[in-house]
Image (tube, one colour):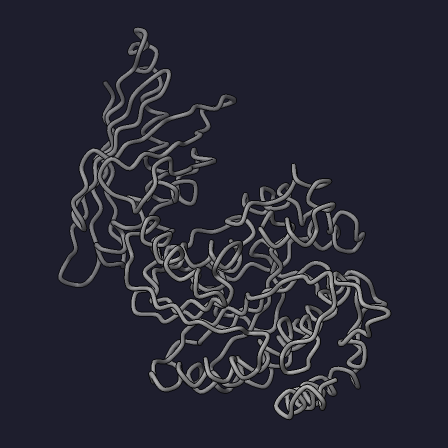
Length: 476
């Protein structure tokens, strides 16, 4: 048996340290030998939770299955890892000090199989060096002093050549980006997060992840029949039963205003607003208010809701965050206000979707400039090509062709979660992100809008909002 013993002191509470370390899905963020970690058991992290880890050992890859054998919040956690060549028992003890720092005591006992103890003895110095490096990584992670990532040179080159940049929308792009990510250790206890469109897909994955991070959630969905299944799903995944769900058909401006009024009446500040609700409609239709529904849901709704909720976002001690979920389809379209509402004879769902997402990207930049003095940061994110129920129903041919390279909803939602949670994500405003990296909003120069169109956009939306309030005849 070989025993490793390391100690560190970090400027975080014992609760934060325990929650981060006990969730072994986080291990690749701080342990350089871990390259992948998945949780195998449902429900919140706790006693008997199991994790599957892939670890590097020189040129080879080792697979370990870890089980939490002791779980004492916020004091200690014991995990047993079982692999082909050895087992390891990790005992991690957290002791919070009077000055608010936490002492972390880490012990790992390695038990080798097949008579490999003698061979392992020759590797003891390397193992100890590995243990020290891992704890240094954990210390850096918990210190949470990350700087904002810029755009890597390789990414800029890929975007310049267009096709390689588009290829990064796939699962391969996610895996490529993940290699360069910094740890996210900030928890969101006491932070109020409002997310639209959470019944499935990206919004659902975001809600679960931010519930796990401790955020107080208000989730907006359209269908009353979805309330109980959504509550149960989040409870099953996270143990949280304190989630607020609001009903609103966000394609209707009356519902948008009623939702905003309910939230304002509660007088609860909003720390993060995620504008995620959306759908791709292959058939053109009008809402009850007489607006083309793609335009109403994808553009007018997030514009109107965000402005109405601005008083709950403004002037926080820490910057409030607005996150607009856009789509790679917008890269093919140029903002022209008089083409945002497509005529029946020219309507194509994918084009209508893309044009609205282009406009939402422009709004992101406009709000970032206009609201900087209100301590609100506004950013957009592109999820890449994600395999969501919306894609399956609206783009079945695309899904059939690309299914093997599509991201799952959790991979697609990762940058939303990072923008909502990471400390460094509050340091920038008015940018577009893909895989936690700032990306150009224009792959093609011909899609750059004129200054006139940028300046006209919000006036145009004001007109359409007024028409919706006046009724179908005015909006037609």
